[in-house]
Structures are given as C-alpha cells and as structure tokens.
Amino acid sequence: MDKIIKIWLKYYPVYLSGLWGTLWISAVTVLLGAMLGMVVALIRMSHTKVLKGITDLFVEILRGTPILLQLYFFWIALPKIVPFELSDTQCIVAALAVNASAFISEIIRAGIGAVDKGQWEAARSIGLSETHVMTRVILPQAVKNILPALCNEFIATVKGTSLASVFFVGELMTSYKTVQSATFLALQSLVIAGMIYFALNYVLSRLLRVIERRLMVSD
Amino acid sequence: MTEPILQTRNLKKNFGKLEVLKGISVDIRKGEVVSIIGPSGGGKSTFLRCLNLLEIPDEGQIFYQGQDITDKKLKITKYRQGIGMVFQHFNVFPNMTVLENVTLAPTLEKKVPAEQAKEEAMALLTRVGLADKADEYPRKLSGGQKQRLAIVRALAMKPEVMLFDEPTSALDPEMVKEVLNVIRELTRSGMTILIVTHEMGFAREVSDRVLFICDGVIKEEGTPEQIFTCPHEPETIKFLSMVL
Image 1 (cartoon, one colour):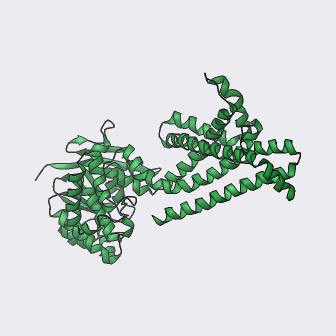
Image 2: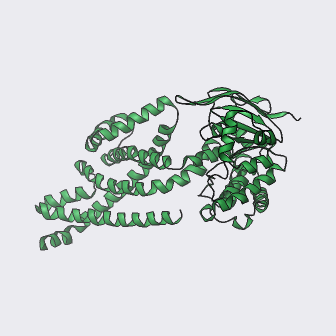
Image 3: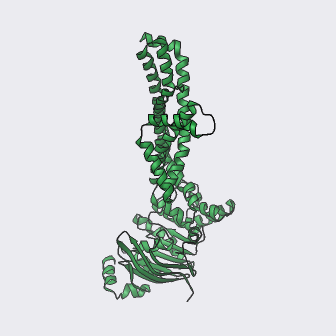
C-alpha cells in the first residue's frame, strides 16, 4: 500500500496526463461516433436499398470483428489512403469513432423506433414534410431514449480507449506502461490506473443517473 | 347536389394475405357529413386511412377535387394539408405545448407568420375551451382535452375535409360528450366530414349519409333514417341489433 502511495506521489503527473488523454479521446470518439452514427442510422431506416445494404454491412463488420483488429487496421491502412500526414493518435481516434458509430447508430435506430407510431402518422396527417416530421416531432422525442444509452456508450468508450495503449497514444494505460517500466512495480502501478478508471466511470454513471432522472421528469 | 370533393374507385388494400379492402367506390360531396359504421376488422379505419394516404392502396384510385392522388408524382405532403385527421389515440405531440402543437404545421408548411398563426390558434383553442391551457404540455391534459387539441391541430391547417377515426373510442365515458360537442359544431359549419364511429346515436343525429362497411366492402349505404330504421342487408341488421 505504501508503495502505491509512493508511486502516486512521484508519478501522478504521468497518470493525470494519461487521464486527460483518455478523457479527450473518449469525448472526441463519442462526438464523432454520434455524428457518423446518426447518418448511418438515418440511411439504415431509409428506403434506398443499395445504401441500406452498404450501411447494414458496415455495422455488421464493425460489430463482428474485434476492436483491437480494427485499431490495427486503421493504424496500418488509413495513412496509406488519405493524402495527408496522420499521427498515430489521429488514426486510433478515427478507428474508435468508426467503431463507436456502429453501436451508436443502433442506439439511435432503437431510440427512434421506440417513438409511438401514432406520432409519425399524426405529423404526416397535418401535412408536415418528411424532414419536418423527423426534426420537429420524432427526433426531439427519440432523444429521451437515446441520451441515456449514449452515456452508457461513453462509459464503454472510456474503457475501450485502453486498447489504444498498444500504440502508445498517451492515454491512461500508456501512463501505466510508462510508470511500470520506470519503477518495475507492475502490480502497484496497475492498481493506480485501475482506481482512476473506476473513479472516472463511477462519476460518469452517477452523472448518467442524474440525466436519466431529469429526462423522466419532463415526461 | 354539389360536386363530389372526394371519390374512390374500386379501392383495394391487402395486409400480407389478408384482404382488408375489397373494392370500395364512393363519392363524397362537398359539405357532406358521412358516418362509417360496421364491425371491428371490417376495414372502416383502413378505408379512412387510405383517404390521406397513411395507407397506400394496392389498387384503385382516389380523386380529390377531380385529381387522382394515388398518382406517384403527386406531392403527398401538399395533399395531406387539405385533409385533416383525428385519431383514436389523439397522438398529440408531447414535446410541445398545446399552442405549439397547433401552430407547428401552419408556420412550417404554410409559412404563416408566427403572430398570425398564434392568433388563429388561440381563436380555435378558445372555440373548444382550451385557451387557458395554451402554454401547458399535453401530459397535463385529460383524454377529452387531448382529443379537442388534436381536432384544433388539424383545423389549424384549414382543411377542406376532416377525417375522424373513432375519435371517442379511447375516452373515458364522461369525456365523450365534450368531444362529440366539438365535432357536432363542426358538422354544422359546412365542412366535409367523414367519421368512423361506434357512437350510433351521434352518427344518426349528425350524418347526411351512413356507410355500413363490412368484410372490406360497403354492404349498405343510405340516410341515417334508412340505415337505422329499416336496414335491408342481413349483415347490417345483425350488426345494428348487436350495438343498439
């Protein structure tokens, strides 16, 4: 125990910078993933067969392969495809965001699907255009279903970013590796990283509860 | 007789293998009040829903003021603005205030200035006794109030035709009257109205014509007097003997 405290006192800046890395990578991942996921969800619900087929396949592949494999794939392939320089971190964030988009598109699709069918009919019956039906009537109601699940996805992403340490992109698990190789105290330095992850996700899930309760009130 | 505003010709609709509408042809004249009665599952609601294309008929035509609206090139949105619909389960928008429910479509789709839309909405809400609820959210309303709001929401688009799909079936008994009163007032205003209903007394009182729909066809039609006092078809006689 005193070793843990000693390590913490000496190396806490390393852990904090790792925590910061985890936080911003997660935030950017969920943000980009949500935007891409929205597009994917809308295409999957549309009636355009070809596009729908492509996005269905997109989601199935991302759900059906390990995330670590996807990270390697983006890390290797993305710099070869794009015409500009990409850092390792950018490749990894892109991979995480694309992966998250598959899951978020499902969340959005389910959230929209949970809105009462009568709302679609009523909105159409008063002569709203399909765009307005979606943006004014359906989506505002779907957000209530989507937001809590999206917060869960954020927690999953926070944990998922640990895989990025394979590429040393400066998140919390990378911090652990740095401290571990400096101190040779593998277990103790790992426990510290674990406690930070736990504390972070505990706070996040509490926050999620509060958000959920707020949403319930306005029902 | 005035000219027909809505006509259907041999309207058919299947859900999978189930034939729900087996060829319905009818002319609705401008200003006419038509009640549609018949047993559950007979196709009444499906017929009504076809009239504003919430269900797309598989066969047959619908003419609105002479124009075929089953034509794929027609803008459905524009057409629907002329046809108001009121549903059994109200379907008011819970994410908007009462007033916003009413002004949404006029401001978005008809580009009515916000002030004018609000004024017109308030006038309509006053007519149905909901003016004091304008800034409330629908969750605070009773079933009867929700349905009156739904009626006002449809009227705000100044439709030529109003369709009522069992407007009182989901209401507690003590609230049926307040909704029927609003509809009764509308029938006197000269609007073209179609009502699917199980309120036989009301149908008899307000209708110019009654359609008895059973097994996907119009089995019998006539004035309320004919249908309710001397029905001819055995199905009509059987149905009326069960509900009256």
